Image (cartoon, rainbow, N blue to C red):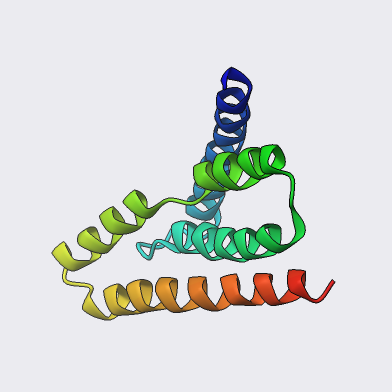
Length: 120
């Protein structure tokens, strides 16, 4: 059990670090009020979870990659906070684009990842 916890914790630390760095880079290069970094990591994470679900069969590797790394990399809580901030600032078009885009793109990219991994 301790080994499994260490796998998830190690993966989570790596995923959260990459998410943080992507936010820093997006803010530096884009500087927009639109939360593109969160949307991007969530869509990329959705694709990767679909892909890895089909490619990885080892339960311990799944703990490291899917639960750990992708769990730390993607974030629903930040997505929710960004959506509320867009609403509070009156950016309703950006809010709609962000929420609908995140959900639709995340779902589509998860399906694409699963489709790719099931064809091999």
